[in-house]
Image 1 (tube, rainbow, N blue to C red):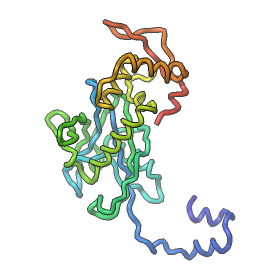
Image 2 (image 1 turned 120 degrees about the vertical axis):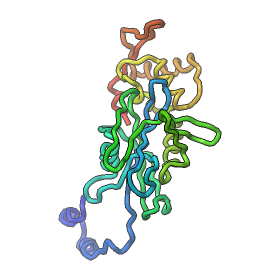
Image 3 (image 1 turned 90 degrees about the horizontal axis):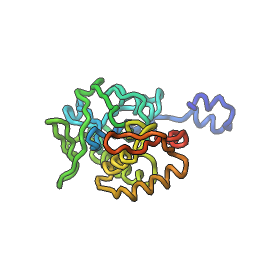
Image 4 (image 1 turned 45 degrees about the vertical axis):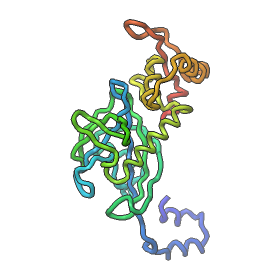
Length: 263
């Protein structure tokens, strides 16, 4: 509710009304607010991937960064800004966003004090198609790899090290991956990376867990946990069909209860 609507609502005292009418909004300096989106998916080789854009303007012109931009004050929420910027810069539309964290260090942007609300978006395997737009020179999906010095983003011949990203996007991405690795142990985040949520094998889900955790999991234990936590609770139901040519595996379907938990 805007101040004018609040003043007309009749829900305030005369004293408060007088205070608001006389209030000077320029009394305090104001930071700008941006939204940044960590868009993650899995490629055909079951590798965790991230969407990055190459900045077309200053600051950090030519540097790779997360899609994002400024919130339009009095016109949209920061979540609406995140969805708009993601579409304008990459062509990704209707992504399900989960708020990650608010980054507000005064020195994170060389222009002024900019507060960024970061989001994560999990895109199903094989469905992330991007195009560059707005103020982005390029938009590219990079494989996330690791070496002794940290995270490396790889796309064909293009390699970007985390320390070469714009702004504080290294910290944002690290937090997003850490949070995803933690959540996947007790939340159904991995399901949103499946190619087909309505028809999948346990092995597909296990491969996504291994990709995110960056470690191999025991097949028997994973199957036992899947049946206990999802099938026996009714969140996933077995289909009367099998998939795979050499060793057909039982296929499963997410129920509406689990679909409604979508991020």
